[in-house]
Length: 203
Image (tube, rainbow, N blue to C red; front, side):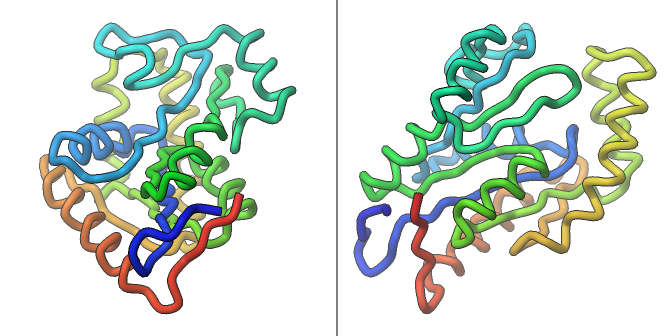
């Protein structure tokens, strides 16, 4: 259990949504504006993109290393997505909560469901596009996938959108309005800190 921080317990915040909705951009902006959270770095087996930094944007592992961590129960949640593994290292979350720090986790919809089962007092936020066409445009701009792979991602995104009502909060990430999106999330977290009774995450 996290230690008490003033009159509240530290928050475990889970940001999720379909691929391409802008979760990474939200985390980067929240870091830049100095949001006082421990931002968990996701582990993955996918190839590193040119602009990504190992240990900062993602922790890049080979498949054997990743599956060995799974076997040792070192992942809070993990999944195979489009042929690659993604997971949230459990040690990062537990250490930060025990130090009284709010924790921010970015994961896919499947991972968010797993965390909600393990930690029902986590704050879950679903990030949605204003239009599905925005999502298609963002994914297409990556130029990292074939037409078939892009079509599969969009098909999955439509199914993931149906999961939004299961989240505590839904935030729309409009094209070109990232600052507004981050502001909406910060307002949600400010209200959550005033919640009575307070959320108390146990892992």
